Image 1 (cartoon, rainbow, N blue to C red):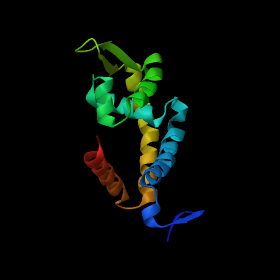
Image 2 (image 1 turned 45 degrees about the horizontal axis):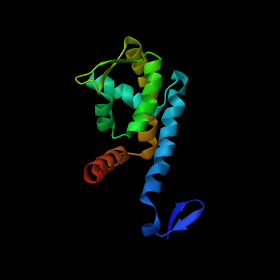
Image 3 (image 1 turned 180 degrees about the horizontal axis):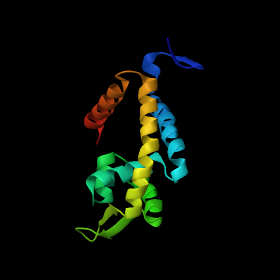
Length: 149
């Protein structure tokens, strides 16, 4: 038997991998969301700001691919960022897709968000212990490269 959490003992083959990943994701996401809340953004929105910071001008479709997020999640996260003037929407290469880029306000918000984001990064690395961050990154990359459709 393996102890899955304080309330359940489950044999290893019976532990749902999706639930195990989502369980950890909820806790980690909440840490980031709590630290970013004073800026009015969530970790999904920070991830989009970060992608635009590094990619420059790009499309929602490209952000979706880079971040491996569902289109609905991207759309929900983009709406308030566009509405509040953090992201500029302009004509793209085709009429079907619009180009997205950070406005000056968006660049400022991204810079403001870096400090709380780094605080969580440091906290997680400290609490997980030496090398566990590398294991998380490697496992994430393995899952995405081998299983992504």
